[in-house]
Image 1 (cartoon, rainbow over the protein chains, first blue to last red):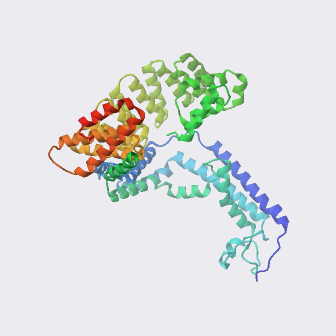
Image 2: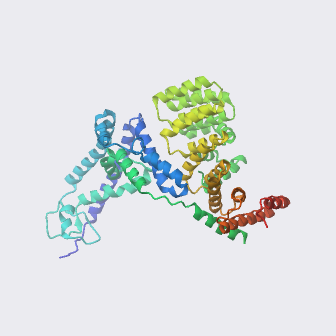
Image 3: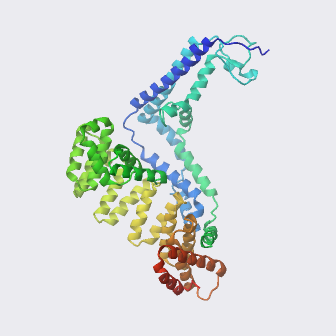
Length: 247
Length: 302
């Protein structure tokens, strides 16, 4: 039943291109608005900074453990993982605190709200706009065949069940743009732009636990590390190098 | 660390500007990005741009960054009058700015008004507890006044918070070495090796400290680290080669009569001796005899 539908070029001119252009413009607008709205007082929390640094140091220790003598490595490991006052040790009771703290701290909550809003509102508005204007017709054809399962997702406005699933509605074009323009934005706006929704969403979900969980994770991985001093190997390698040099 | 291409670029631009071929703004931007300390050049070219009103307005909002950069360069070259003018201009434009506050405190430091500078830095820190630049300035001030133990104290406090700052560890290591507190220096160098294991400089410094500490175990370790330095630099580091020879002879002296691992050691030591001789023949032929006699006295050369 795969008849080839011929799509009017007017669809391309008046649907696909304007939609992409509008999304790019909205993205740029969002970037500038978020820059303006960002509170200038971004005082980093001392505890957070310290924890971040501790994690970096612990990670370095794990990565290069084989380059320092065994004694120093063990001493450092105890320093980090010591039950009482080790840097990475977090007693169970405190694990819940960061998240509760986050929501009770008005400043941080406001910041998060602002960031969330600047993400969600344009997205919602654009989605509603797309739905209102560009629904009920086939917008594009996906170049590869799909199974019937995708029908409900991709062909929302189209009420014909006989149309091939590769023909999609403009809603799916909207979603494609949403995720795909991230690369374009990082070209135009440079790194760290506010349009990085998906990344931000992933960060959001992990935020509250970030310090304590990663500390615990670092501690465990540090416990596992087996120290194998690489330096004797280096002596042999130096010999080889010198032999080549001298000969 | 500055990469090789960037270094070449800077040198090329420097040559170009010195010979009057334009490109001053790019040079200044590059120096600022790489945080190099070419204060004389920065001052000269920055002044030429700033005193020329046409060029200055062409910079637009970057003008203020240039003011900051030239002010710091002026302070470095002891042109305090110029620095004061620039800072005044900046303060007029950006009142109540932390960055300008930092510059003003820096000017107080340059004028040797230590207590005022200290007060200024403390007040700045009250606003923003975690400004690494201010912490480092405090350490620098203590060091400049000759108060080394104070410098150590501030540096330790800084490192408690910012543990991953390898420049700070390096500074601390050098201070400890200057005070002959070798065990602490060894600890700092270990931190440096951990964070950047492929830089031969840290291996070399660590080996030096271990050799200075002495003791059989430390000598063995020092030899291994000299070997790793040799490996990382492809055998070209003369100091490491000397280190290997010295360590081997010192170990031999300490273990007189006990023949442990004889085969491996002698190969490494004799190889490094030969490499040294070859190097000297190429680069300093009149010192070869001196080298030969030294090595003979260490019982290494045949």
